[in-house]
Amino acid sequence: MPAAAARRPRQPGGEARCALSSANDHPLLNAELRLAGRLDGRFFDLLAALALTGSLQKAARTAGYSYKGAWLVLDAAGALTHAPLVDTATGGHGGGGTRLTQEGQALLAAWRGLQLRLDRFLTDQEAWLNDQPGLAALLKRMSMKTSARNQFFGQIADVHEGPATTTVRLALAGGQQVTASLTTQAAQDLGVKTGQEALALVKSSEVVLVTDFGGYKLSARNQLAGTVSRVSPGAVSTLVGVTLPGGTVVTASVTHDAADALGLAVGQPATAVFKAYAVMLAVRG
Image (cartoon, rainbow, N blue to C red; front, side):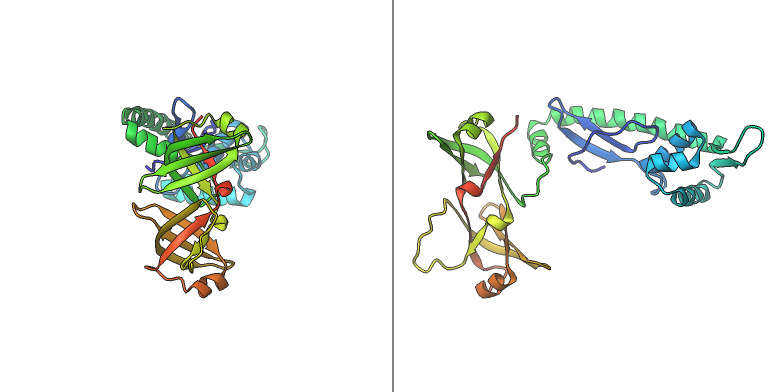
């Protein structure tokens, strides 16, 4: 079961995604339950809705299937169980509709029981994680989702507060430092202070690669020297990874022409350059 950031689970009859929340409401664990490798939470949402409504059309809409798609998945499940899971009646004294067979009801009940067992299991594992401070902190850092390719974790080494702008230096594990420039009001709102753990977020498009300074010096605060470890041409641009001493990787998005002009190749020395104002700082609230 993968450990990852997770969203809150829904609570209908057959939701498969079980997430555990830590004290500060940032889930650490997520597990998806599947039976026979195919029957997932969405399928059991369909069964639960059928049990409530007696209408396949309504149940399909509730679970996000088309009417035809719902029939197909029920037929496939019936082939797995070797027994029909639903019974369809047309017209008659009691009216038409689609209802769960005894096998369908038993399967839905078993799923709900497994969900409860999984919840208890994840609760126990969450408690164990919280007793491992280093591991829990690592997983919590993974819980933030952002489009910024570069996420540098470190400890705030220095805070220089000015009337309008505050400069924050973040010390990385490999010995490098990343400098962020933010408004003083933003720094006060974040409550930044020396010794605090923080993330520096930088878009790959903000990173300029330099392979030869040609005797010039740049005004950009952040100049991280490393080795090109990845060159991945894409449809629009080329992604280049520069690995710093200590293992941190800086990703830059450059045009194909620029990549060709620099002659970028794995193993080549390069410096990732970005301005302090391009750095977004994140701290745990």
